[in-house]
Image (tube, rainbow, N blue to C red; front, top):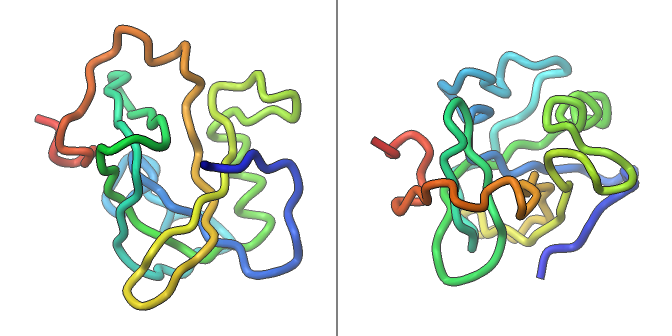
Length: 135
């Protein structure tokens, strides 16, 4: 089960991105500063929903969600929190979660931005679990 996050420890931080933040997306994380370090492609348990200009993922279940993992600095994490409208009271558009992600031979604790459940009610599911293969 994903864990809610509210603090940023000093250890290396990783983020799993699945939508517009992926390489080539409209918010490509590689354009951000401080520059993230690409770690690899990965997949996690989750359901991807089409919200029009961007997706929202709900974590868990048997469906797969495809994305990329990056090592990030705290300053970039703060920017991502703002982009994803994360709020300390968990009332923002997205919730910041932590899940274990297998990337090659490594198992990493990664941040994942999960959409609020009520925001995907009635929205189409992207059956492939891949934002870039939605159409």
